Amino acid sequence: MAKAAKTIKVEQTGSAIRRHHSQRSTLVGLKLNKIGRTSELQDTPEIRGMIAKVRHIVRVIDET
Image (cartoon, rainbow, N blue to C red; front, side, top):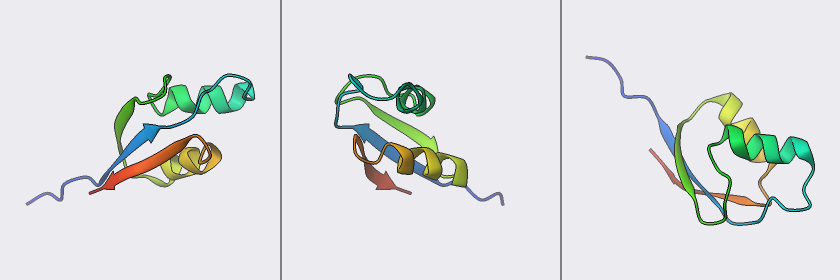
């Protein structure tokens, strides 16, 4: 029986306006681009690092 991949659900809470271009690119990589949008992603160290980079404008809703 295969293990189900862990997922993490993220919501954008702040605007990307007046943010550095690398932070905007990180939001696009997280499949976010507008306040209130949510995205469900695989829970990997790379995704965790991206979330840490923009932690001031996103929040983790759920980890499964």
